[in-house]
Amino acid sequence: DINLPPAAGAPPAGDSGEFDPEAVSTLCSMGFAEAHVRAALKSCMNSVERAADWLFSHADDLDAAVAAVNGSDTAAGPSRVDNEDGVGEYELLGFVSHIGKHTSHGHYVCHMRRGDGGSWVIFDDSKVAKSEAPPLDLGYLYLYRRKDASA
Image 1 (cartoon, rainbow, N blue to C red):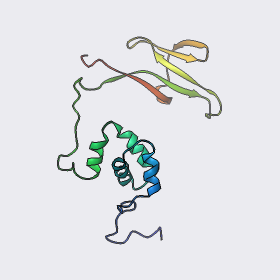
Image 2 (spheres, helix red, strand yellow):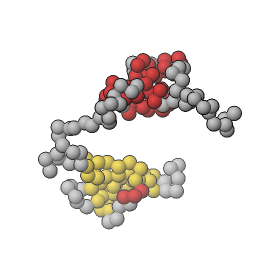
Image 3 (cartoon, helix red, strand yellow):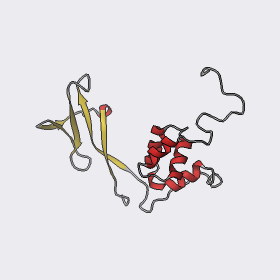
Image 4 (cartoon, rainbow, N blue to C red):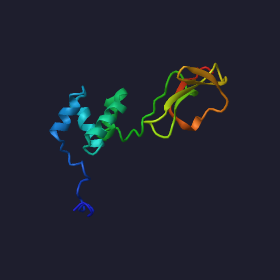
């Protein structure tokens, strides 16, 4: 029964060590190695959709992510990446927002900042105008630029 707690000593759902061959095949067909796919499925309790997201989210260093999932990296603690170009600091360049009650009604506009720390401009179809009070909290998509590491 789904409403009953798991029996004592039973492995958590999706942690039986067995993987659906179809799930493995589907994820491998996306170009991932089977070891990476198995670690993703283990980490995501055998959910194919979540495992695909996990694989793409860890694509920059899958081997380290797999090692962490498999427990071979637990003694070292969480890994830290020291970037040679300094700490990443970003500034907001612009954002896209929607005007209308529903996404099926109305349209999207873009607010962009002119120059370094300058005034805001709204791009609304073929009209461009100064935006006195841009709705910063209503954006759907925000555009950032990394500040120079030496600044």
